[in-house]
Image (cartoon, rainbow, N blue to C red; front, side, top):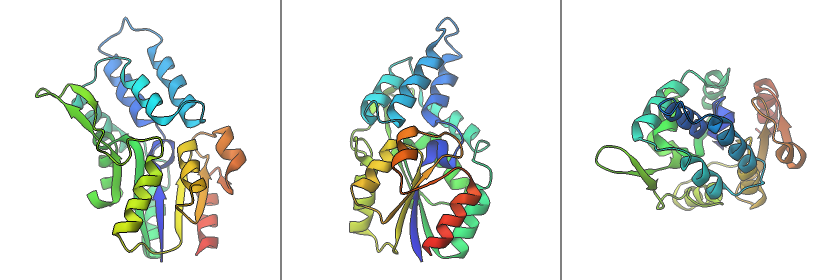
Length: 225
């Protein structure tokens, strides 16, 4: 038995969920040319460690007005954007008694549909929340979320260690600098940098294990157990 934590954006999913939300919202603002590229630049700065997590998120959600519907519609779309092979990987992990969690800096309405499609319960899904008005317009990020911090994944994993009987070893898989930071904080036993969808130079250089495909990931996981 073991416990594994997966990042969502560019790891379980081939896309960056918040970028997809904003791209959908921007379809209503065709005069706002160049903003999709601006959002992608901010995302990459955050994932490469050039901009902290909270600053990256706040800069992106300020690009245009957002409604909860943009997040829920994106969530349904992203079920069709899972990294090829992840359904089979999750089945294999369960067959070997791994406990699986998704810990994402994205937002629950756009992360949960894919996670549930992969067979995870609400208790196995951690992401940020939103505060909206009565018509669903996004007012702000729910600051009560454990993930709403620059060290959110560290906080979530520590919370689970304090409240659950997690099977060891603890493994984290992700593509971004915030994933790497959680490993460096000492909250997991193993970190695997994931580069099948995008390679972040800092993560590739500093990860104790770095993989570029699902088959490589499975090989590393087999060696852990």
